[in-house]
Image (tube, rainbow, N blue to C red):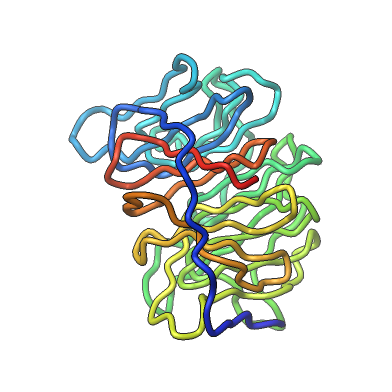
Length: 273
């Protein structure tokens, strides 16, 4: 296991190339579809009924369930998968339901679609402190569990895994409590990234990977976006004008980074090229 630590890192200040307004605060997840279109999920804290709907370009799908999203890749907005809190199932807007029942006591957090068509799901046991445990399950498209990632040498790997993505090299990258946990495609631990040396706290949220297999993760608490290489070394911090609590991330085929901030109704788009 490699523990990535550095003494200092360059702050890469980037320009915002465009903004997308989605009309509501408290974004939880963001997924890129195609041709500049994105899917948005927000937390419903205003007391209104939770709902989801197909939107209009560039917001292809909008949900107030506050759950994480993934996209099946058929360029059909109704193929966005999300956790439906009312039916307690993973489903799409077209009402396709994944025939999968989480382990007793566990509920899904982050979800991601693999290039192979398999689905990665973060699960949490809803306990706190020392009893909080999580795992990642890899599902086939028919809902059959292919394997679970839970421990390494009989030690739990996760406390509360929240966001997840598959890297271009096949690695599975997970935002957990105070760490980004990276395993290989078979679920064996490669490294844990716990922030740069000198950080008093590291709180990873949204996560995605660029075309060079670098891992990009948002820390809403420290108001930072980290660019980490595929081996767990911090390359630099991404910064832009008036950054404020970045939480949700996604990236397109041209390495344009989409950033959803917790307290703002805009998605900021940055070019990493």
